[in-house]
Length: 247
Image (cartoon, rainbow, N blue to C red; front, top):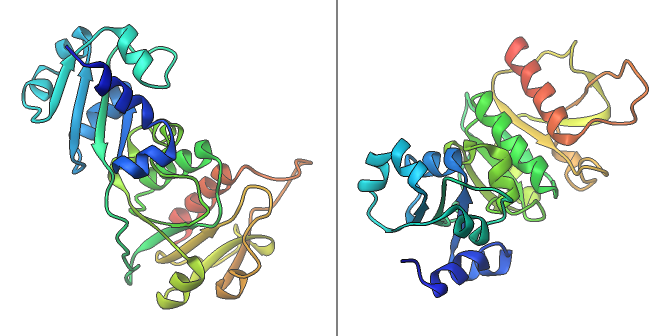
């Protein structure tokens, strides 16, 4: 039987300060938990229902951490989902380890993207287009926020990422930096390479003025209607798609 202290520990991970303090995070729902169990994350706790066990007996039986068969009511009380009839898992946060963007690679850099839903969707978009590296500004939403992980639909297990000062990171890479600007070149007409860094900015302010000097190629998505702007996640998808079509 799961203890009250364990449930209290899991619930505390809903808050960023406790995720940092405990160096841990949780995911919930069958898809995210299953993806997590197949990933290289160190999973420490598994809460599962009879239904989840019936569908994934080998995953549960081979799990080496603390595991508990619980009711849907306990799963719902431990997490943030209104309904969760399957599973919840706790894992260790990965080290914030810097990497570089090599020749022939494409990476996404996010400047102050604060909405968790947008970050999670961008992670999913990166995974869809085969982009394995995300570089996140220190003001960007917490990767391990439950809303981010849920919106990523398991894609968070298949991308590498780290948080850094983009003013320091970008000039060190020696790679072309593409940035989304209203006054940029029409992306439909631009010559795009299959390598470099795509920089996306804040939901309302766009790319920061202090990062603009590092952008080698400004791009824009042409507007055909009257909408004032595009959601940053949607814009990221459009830009990534054009890179795949034209590179």
